[in-house]
Length: 185
Image 1 (cartoon, rainbow, N blue to C red):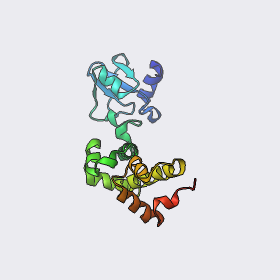
Image 2 (image 1 turned 30 degrees about the vertical axis):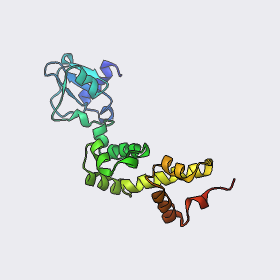
Image 3 (image 1 turned 90 degrees about the vertical axis):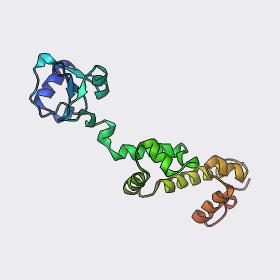
Image 4 (image 1 turned 30 degrees about the horizontal axis):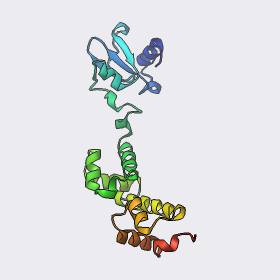
């Protein structure tokens, strides 16, 4: 955390370089703001500074309705839909779509399935199911290259619901069955 004088000088200048670096809490109103807040600056004796919006809220302050400190840079809300897609990608990597559908994933993220699909289309260029399928095939390919597991076990560990889907995915992508891609022993 920066020292009081540095924060106060940045607050009085409304310096955008400090936006999201610290938050100004006003003791008399019990409101916290971003350093770039357009309201009349409070007296220096009435302010304190916090390193995060969460710290200011924990101290009993509420967010300013004018500068919306919860949307400051480096906050999840500021990153917007990119954060949602990144979180979805992590969940998909962890197998969120191996046993459930896009609706269940969207529910975990707090958005609708159609919106999630739209976000993926815009930012990833593929649907969540296509991403999950690609990850499953990559996992399976790694297992085929690195292990001697039976095909049913490779399919199961890769996240495929059945051996038939496993074989169909490989046939669609590589034009051959998975056993043809396994390196000879």
